[in-house]
Image 1: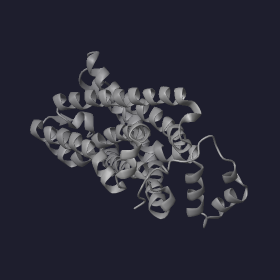
Image 2: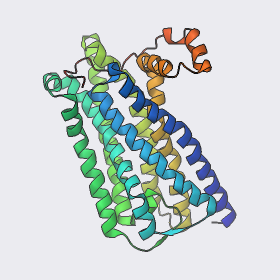
Image 3: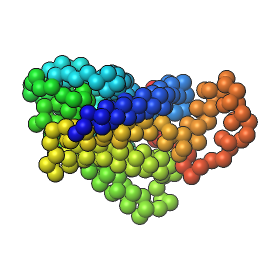
Length: 310
């Protein structure tokens, strides 16, 4: 592939990384601040969502040095690149499983309500984050074991990992996303069958989560499936690297979207967000126009079934 095309592609990817960092960091940090400042927004589900936001913040920040390398054209060896972004790879693995845990959380709310009420928020959150931690730690550990001194064109997760580990990472992510999607489809069918018999707060949580899951699965699916598909169809060398690296767009979309979906689908988060930023004149104008009074189809992400708000 021509050097001019590669250079243009590198600049394009670097620009994407910078722009998504601006919006993604703003959204994820705002979600953490709202959860901390507004006790009414705290629940088991929101704590798991906070863990997802923390993971996405790390993922976005670790993309910035990669943007710098793309602008300068510097290439690194795998034994330099991988240790430098191993923490990023840990969080990129963790966030994929945390999204599954959010759907499992809804499953537990619906089918194991009594157990859900009895477990305090902190203990529940720790238990739900155990599987993401183990998966992420295993992948990073294997990456260190298989690390070599091959020169990598881009210092990003699918390329910094040894090809064998990268293949495991992409295939396992496709499998995780498949489980997430299947479980969510099951819950959608169940909710449709139950209709209005289901608790209102659970139905609202389901409607809010529906958009997040769809966007997450298809953005993350496109990223991981694309990485694996390009290998499967026989692409090699610089052509393979070119297509794999452009999958970063879908990863960046995944890291950025959760908070904005919250604002769109939850009046509670919109109200809390405007109140937090009401010291700005532009936000005061939005508030004065009564925008917050127009409630959308979905209202809340807070589960009133939590036995503890601590």
